[in-house]
Amino acid sequence: MTVRTRFAPSPTGMLHIGGARTALFNWLFARHHGGQFLLRVEDTDRERSTAEATQVILDGLAWLGLDPDEPPVFQSARQARHAEVAMQMLAAGQAYRCWCSPEELRAMREQAIAEGRPPRYDGRWRDRDPAEAPAGVAPAIRLRAPREGETVVRDLVQGEVRVGNGELDDLILLRSDLTPTYLHAVVVDDHDMAITHVIRGDDHLTNTFRQLQIYRAMGWQPPAFAHIPLIHGADGAKLSKRHGAVSVLEFREQGFLPEALCNYLLRLGWAHGDAEIIARDEAVRLFDLDGVGRAAARMDYAKLLHLNGVWLRAADDARLADDVLHRLAQRPALALGTIAMHRVRMLMPALKERAKTLAELADSAAFLAHPLPLPMEPKAAALLTPEAKLMLRDLAPALAATDFTAPALDAALRAFAEAEGRKLGQVAQPLRAALTGSTASPPIDATLAALGREESLARIAAAAR
Image (tube, rainbow, N blue to C red; front, side, top):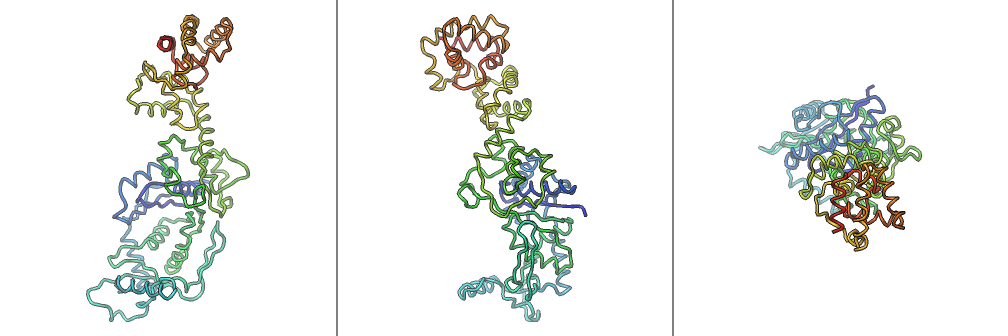
């Protein structure tokens, strides 16, 4: 058997962080077992599904590196097939027509609630003669669900879960306009796509009992089910916008790396010993459903930020520089020519040691592209005292006499500090303020080398004035 999993989002909004983790788990499970990962866009809600939302989902999955092995399936294109299966069930006596009006269904629910019963359809058309149907009314088609016994889900995460069939009503398969309901369409699509494992959030567990009844009515082999716990905020409540960024593409804009986010999501509800930093290849080797816990996971943004810093420091410098340059290009105050680009690329090994996100990295690199006059942070301006300005005037010739490589600049700074009877920091900090407009930067010798002789001396002279 070839393992086939699927991720089936509805394009009615963004790809949120919970959906991204579900997609990741499906992708990893398929890869671990040498199988295939598929994508189905469940766009049957025509009023709320948009092409823009679909593209956001596709972009988010592509950014995370979770590309499907086959072209995406769009559920809205399969409505004829959904109707065909419902008609087969009708012909086999596994379904029946129901002519209940919306008013009757509303009254049925209200009465059940008033009597303290769950609001379920009472099956009034289950065995009724169709000859009694009201004229000019299009019927819905309902499943003739079993009323005796139990439906059992042997879940690969939650264990064995049972529900009495008497607690389930005859669900609608096709509405009166012949459009399928979600529960019916999902079963038909999973069967036709030969899905072997359905891995999804545990908020779908109650749906599974109903879907299993459709499989049995059609005589189809159901897939294995694995319902993973939801993600909660740090306060234990279901993750929502008030907990911060929840869209995958928001994390991209905030400067998180896809490998860091995937690493974090992998460990959000799945564990393998004490391992924390897990690369994609290693995740494929290790991942299986027996490592998924049953308790809800809690989103910890501080931990994600730390993890992103680890991955940032390990990332390729050229890749980081390209991203930073793209971010800096959005800032009109900067002069982002080829010289500034060279500076960013040259200083990247030192810049990335201090940053935790690409956005921070861009902020810390912005001084490399800023024309004079350089904006000054208040703490940096405070370092440029009259005495410090005089020192910078004296320092400039000593720096200009070097070949402007980092080792030569470091030696010149140390020699100047010793000759002046100062500590190295007393020289470096005013110099750093003059060069960057800040009190924090990569090592001062590397910063001078990246800026180059002409720009460094111009900044020193501007600060000294």
